[in-house]
Image (cartoon, rainbow, N blue to C red; front, side, top):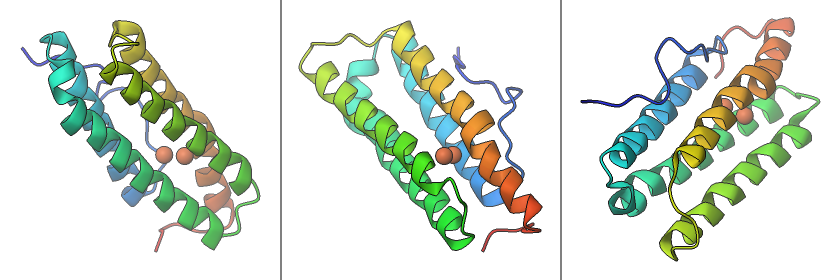
Length: 140
Ligand SMILES: [Fe+2]
Ligand SMILES: [Fe+2]
């Protein structure tokens, strides 16, 4: 049975399609990894799904930062610090899983879910609100 860590019904829309689609893809990847974890196969997916989570997160953060810069978002630097912190953390976690120092657990799964949902609904929502206040209705 397919296990779902982050449900479609969990709200995480910032109201800009390109960003929402990236968030959905990220949620799908995290759910894939969670599914592997529930089947006891998380270790086998470290070099594929988990690495893809890191790569795609990096790509997604770069897109957000590009738009924040383009539209002169005043809190860009603070937002970037949070992005960098998360990327460092999930990279460190990968090395720790691989060296056996850290076990992939429900706690870690919940960390991924909570970080992502809290970031989207807090920090990301702030730039989305700013864009709307600037009458930016579509990102391009
Ligand atoms: Fe985001
Ligand atoms: Fe963000």
